[in-house]
Length: 279
Image (cartoon, rainbow, N blue to C red; front, side, top):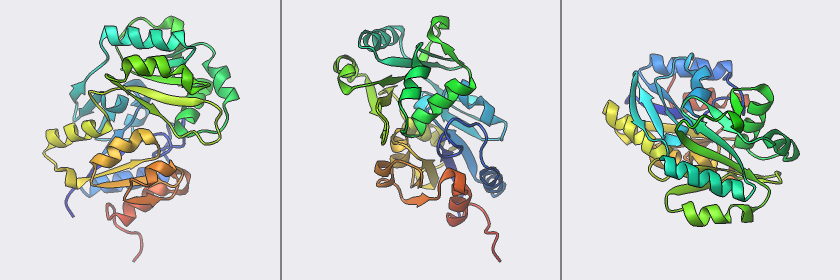
């Protein structure tokens, strides 16, 4: 088998939503795959600050901020925050319509006051909603918006009660940004991400492949939600977790067990990335 580049979403894929501790089976599979010569990357909407707790596990790099910040082997391959004008316009449009905002810089995140209360009312939903709820409840470093110091940001996570609250922002910003609204089964709110059209997880993967001289035919991606779609459409083999989005599953090569059910370890064995423990 050719050596593969493996790209892993975090929340709902590598870890339970909001957690920084992968199952032991996943870590063992990742290390075994690396021992076979494969390279394993994080591929996440999280900014660098929020993925840092996972870097201790020895990943080979990351596509962070949904593709806006990409690094491997100690080298930054791509760094593309919003312009100051874009940032100010986006934040103003959301605020004027009562849309709650979480903004992500490279090394810090800030959210509007009232976010925690809003999330407590909005039960259900997918891994992205759960991640932000857990992040606020467990203090994973998301600061109140009043502490924001103007540093460059890469992405805005938005939450609101109704779709019409997004309409003005969509009209003005959709030429420059994707409005990625998550599948929200059971939730009574809208949750999504404002992502620059200059990048996505797929373009981040292409940048890693180009830097390492590896063809896309030797790539595998694992995800669980619709913010993983561009990753799944870019890699040669796309894998969705059983706990993932029904829509994403339709785009994937295979579905593996849920994150809490040793899904990554199972898929790594089935894909031949690690040696089977069966004789």
